[in-house]
Image 1: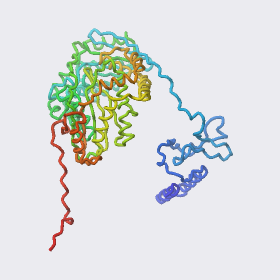
Image 2: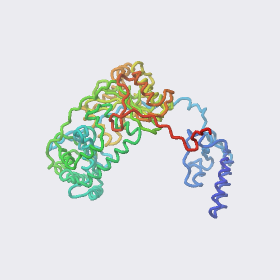
Image 3: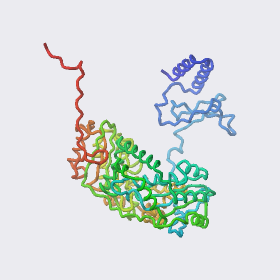
Image 4: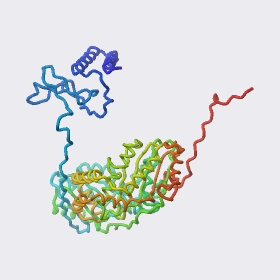
Length: 592
């Protein structure tokens, strides 16, 4: 059916359901006349050119046909081509005989791609440091653009400090902390915060926990009063605690439901090591073991001396110090000290597999321990990882997505903690290509270690790193987050100035050296979640059998193939599904 035939059929059907026949057929005739006047015809369908972007439809017909405003609006008009037309075709001459306007690919200026301007240096923001009488270290970044304030109280305690058997304690307790106060339940506390345009929330990470406050400048006093009430008399109600625990249990069920979720769930354990403070896998028994008394004790440790307060907004040091001392002067005591976390465990090149029957995609990953964030070759390591897997144009993404067509995307890079890092490369691939994708990932790492990168690869990633830098400081809050990371890793507050200089100095030899030193030749951890009984694309039997072949060939080392369940516990090998029983009418006939 042609586009026009379909239009009339739709109008006819609509006309039988109401009395608008004349109006609808009239509209169709007008539309048909417009198509013929433009010479559109029926040369193609819109979905044949998905790469051609079209403007959204106008609000009404008059807006769609109105000429552009300006001095020449009465003499010339431009009409966009229909979605089915090639966007490079010129529009037809108007009824008044004016010259056609259009897009001409042969114009001289199109012969050369526009060159971006040189990347400007980003200056480190000015940070005012002072200490309150309570021992709280304050980092203040003034901002005069908007009348708002953001405050973040940071403590060196998080999930890595959770006691054994109570994984998730810090996260649960910090979620509970900002729910209410002794005098105001959850609803009342939320209403009081809203009355003063204030938000208070208390997230927890692996190594830090924070109390965050965002408010208007004029509401700084009331916002600090609400915070003082929360610190002095937190609500910590049983009903709120029970609700959070039940929500976490529901989250656990979801985390075992898909290949990607299971891979994310187990990756820390497989990369850092079982029993490592950063490698714990939470189960329902952990949540059942956490008590309200545990949470009261945990938040009671969040004291000021030795903690850090980050502030940005439209205020002054004098005003800020006066308000903090006046409203939080009661707050005394020593904050938790950061714990020593060991480096990641090194594995003997093991392939870990979790069977997920019926999965149409497999989550595949390859990882290893990495260098310290303070390593001297950080910039070269960063660019090397970007070329390998960090950007859309990275090698692994171009391989698995663009060349092979096995995945929508693949990525990789280093994730840093205070005492070290891990490198991980991950992708979700079509299930039959699971073992092939693992082999390609390992090959990309091997090639990166044993050959030089191309000059254009280095130039692309270096330019990208420099040009994205201004966006990292685009807002006061983002500026604070960048500075917090520097202090977390023990780096100077002006580190980004040397970072830009070091990026420009990285050459191909430095990239090669970083790859040789920080990427393993063997001994990586491979983790795969997928349907082990699905047929493998390379004709080597099932997905599980193809992975076993890679393990036997010692693709990443001598660790073999280990089967786990969704909680990281040993599990049996996937069993082949039983053949379906024949239907009664398919039973073999016997001769009489």
